[in-house]
Image (spheres, rainbow, N blue to C red):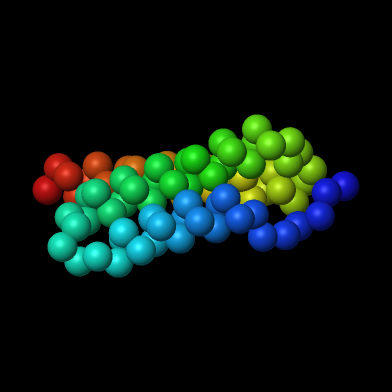
Length: 80
């Protein structure tokens, strides 16, 4: 069973997406797309790195679910 720790790649990717999301001049749709892409990348990255025990699979599932939610939210803002 693997250990749970801070993944530096995930931290940097989501941190950059968070900073972009805080810039108010960026349209909301773009902010949601950036966060969705970052979370999708982190989920796929962690899956390909061999994190296959139960706790990490839950984290991967949460990342991918939030990625889909952010992309759908971005599509809604884009259609307004």
